[in-house]
Length: 75
Image (cartoon, rainbow, N blue to C red):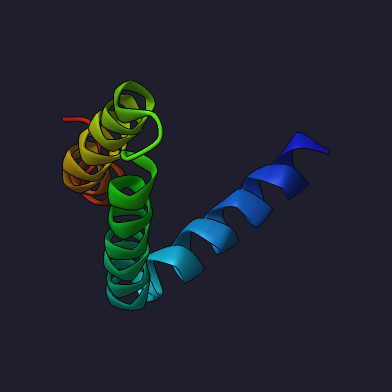
């Protein structure tokens, strides 16, 4: 059964890599929209908005190295 799940994981990974450019654009648009919403939310609770913004920026900064690791391998 694990061989079947491994095959499914490989197919999903290959399909995601084929859509990498489109996914990158969608993530960018999502980040812009969330950033605008965090600016609006910052009027009510600035600490919470700043923390959420920091987490979002850290995730976006981590996306490129993770993509390189997935595509090229760890070594």
